[in-house]
Amino acid sequence: MSKREYSLIHSDFNPKTKTNEIWNDFISDHALEEIGITHSSSTNTKKQKICPRSFHHDEYEKVILADFSDNHDDHLRKWELLLKTKFTLQQQGKKKWLEHRELRFEHFFPVEFMNDPKFVFNHIQKYGYGLAFAQTQLKQDREFILKVVQCHGSQLQFTPFTLQNDREIVLTAIKKQPHAFRFASFALRDDREFILEAICGHNGEVLSYASPTLKKDKELLLAALKHNTSLINAWSLFSFHNTDWETIFEAIKQNKNTLEAVSHDLIQNPEFMLQAVKLIFPEFEHLQVFDYSTKEIMIRIVQEFGFLLKYMSKALRSDRDIVKGSQQQWHGICLCLKGVEE
Image (tube, rainbow, N blue to C red; front, side, top):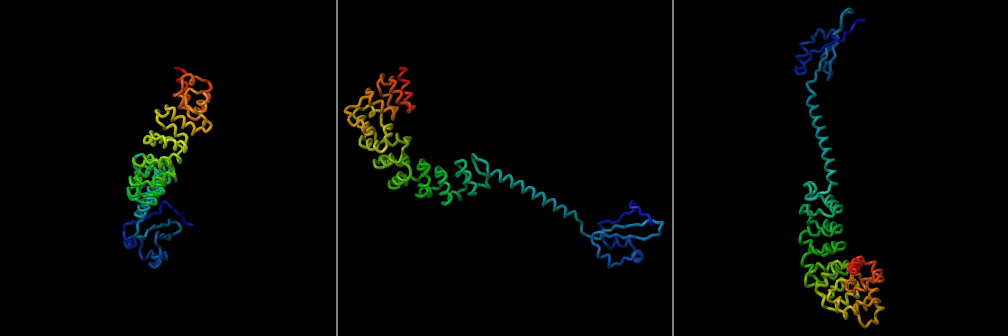
């Protein structure tokens, strides 16, 4: 067998040279006929052409490699790399976008989230704020706002005036957060029927945010005290009624804790306190005179109203039974200890 030296195998092909020029320079018609390759068969070779040449047994064989394709693949590789880079950047952007959706924003929303209802609602649901950073178009969406105020009624303040005057939206907002009523339109805050509906259906605290005229309404006040066990806003409510005994006694019937909102002048009035104590403690119906120095009465009273300790005589403030009876009233204990030290 003839020897083959692959190191001698070479190609003189220049990919930039036309196919016919390569054919004429390196392979003659005689050589083609000698090795049995015709023009018709050469056209079937697309990517690579191997042209073996036969020699005597003691000679080497020569293989010429030729690429007859006039298409170079460098530009294909270029587009492939560009697409890969674009895909990588898209994935990085998507990851960053998803991470930002879970962040807490203190002062603004990124522009890509400002008109995203799902993102804005989730932010409000998690952190209690965010409607102020949304686009105006989203703030004007009634269905979206209704959903938001169900979650956090105080977001009503960032809605357009038309929605602040919407009865359904305002009632929904004050259902869990009565203080949201202060962000309602003045027309609703001055609407007696609407406020009465809000008080009876939700919380008496809404009266604190009504118009000054309606705050003086006796019927609304009594309704508010009936539906509100909290005393947070009782001071502001009673500022208009502290001289009206009838209203105060009606309020005490609705909520005995109303006594804490009564003025100091009335608390120190024996006649007023006598009637108040009879309303709060029916067992004292037989009382003829109220006296802060009467131990029998004060032991019972301080169990409910520890703040009254400061009106007692020094002897009662130092009394062990009185102190023991007021242990459930932290405020009363502090006043009592102060009196004992004095």
